[in-house]
Image (tube, rainbow, N blue to C red; front, side):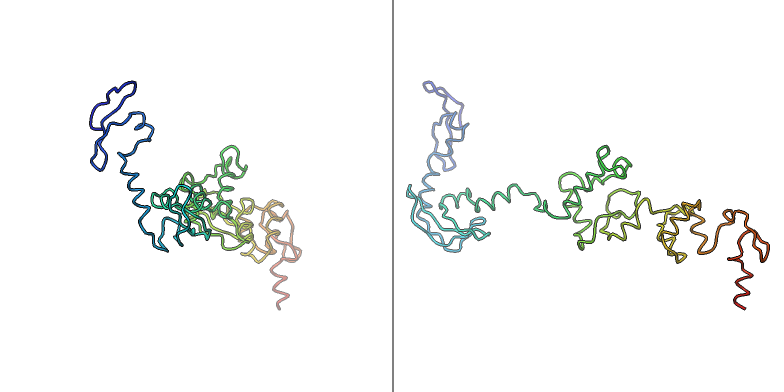
Length: 284
């Protein structure tokens, strides 16, 4: 507008200047509703475009022009176009030039309503399950209520994309998400894809606190060349984690000898079967 609105009869008008330089009195209501956009030069440009040639193979968004076909009912030019997805459809030339039509309906809808296109992937389902079990009140008892949380980097808008960038794709169907430190949070550096064997070794029920550091029961078993079930049995019989770590096969802690006296040497810290003198005699 180039002047103040004024009353003309029962309606309010305003003096407006078009981009072409022409001035015209326009109804204010038409301006507010967007029904008046120019002095008429846009319609003239539209008519002029109807006579401009369009080369085959010219691209408009996702459309590629194949060739011109019969005009529409209003006399407007129509072109047969092919979308990037392969679908072919007649499109009005005006819709192509104005940007109203940029692709077939399916492609436009997927581009409009698709965030990342990974909603059916294993990684996305893993990310959602991770957030669900870490909920402070509704999560799994061993995760959310226990204080395990998902870092802020992997939450909110773009959280899944950042999670996927940090952790990567699942290597195979035998892998699932796991934490290196079982008492730590889900955060970069503490999360990796693990096999079932790695998951079982790192369960909170399979770890022991030994001399100020946390080890798995399988690590203790491998140290002495015995089975993990043997370590579990020793714990049930009253062994401490330190005693399981320090004493191997056939070597009981002194406090668990129950007063047995060796009949060979008279010592009370072992029995006849594990007596060193018996072993020396057998070697001789």
